[in-house]
Image (tube, rainbow, N blue to C red; front, side, top):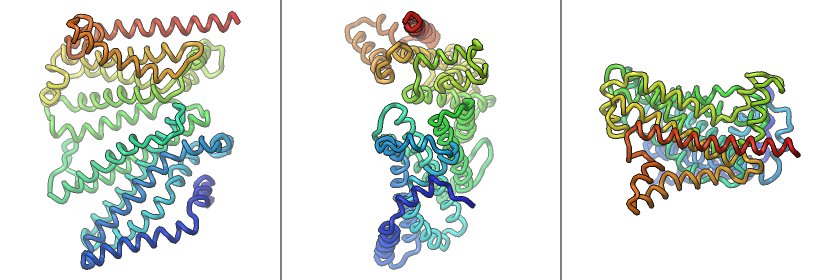
Length: 452
């Protein structure tokens, strides 16, 4: 079996003789100290082993994974790797497992102690927890690698440490909650089923690891200019709706609310994801021109190639609108209505319009982004968009409210100041104005290019 070239390169670079010796030596000293201070308690050794694996593999390995791509760009080695014969999947495997290989190596010593001591304390449950920890670590590494790629696309070569800390908290919170629930004998309910906490944790972490690796592979495919249909992000948001919806359904209940719960999570995931994609993807006048020329038949590929060329944020926005329309048409159920009444007002025909209003606000924000991105010589459109959205949604309405001009504040940012229908109308007008300006600036730039 041929070893992945990128993974082998990382092993040569990172697994130096010093690290190969120091890692087990330091782990042995820590474990010896714990064993001596706890009178050789297997429970203390098991806890130390699991904690050491989390510190080495999850924390330190995740940091290395997120730093890998920015470091490649800073050291000017990424362009050479893009010209290699590796496929996106091979490159993703090599980097996701290779960049944090030191963390995996050090964590493996602690994990071995946890398996030995934990099996005596917990039996088979220790194996389930260990496997879940490994899958959760793979998930964090793959997501960290993807975020590193997005940071590079946005023009940054720095490691986004704050985002990494949030990911660590997210990766550790749910497994800890399930482990605690298992020890307390609590019942886990998922779509009416009652799976054991640890088995559900294992299957969930394995599923998220697969999705995270797929996301990393598709991100590398984008960097290698490999054309691909944008199906993975909507599919993951739908999976997230089904997975999280099953956990929420037991709390909200209510006949007919299951589909609405899934669609509500799908709407929120695609809507919030649109902002992240908007600020990290490359979008410009050439992108729109290429899509239009492909649809007109001037370039080969037809509709399929045009769909492969559109920015992913536009697909995410379209999915958010699909979710908002579906929420308007489907029954929410009494349980979901009661839980969401404080968030989306009274769940009636009026309250169910709120997702459409939020989708219209999203459409306005993407229009503002395109005003700056589609001009002839764009200058940091993401930063300009963030500035103007903050001014429109927070600063300017607050100033108008303080000045007593409530009508102006209402017309600028109607959320919390008007009904859902009123907010929908105002955001729709703002979105139409923003997109009209964006299209005008783009067409004006095209005319100048033709003239020159």
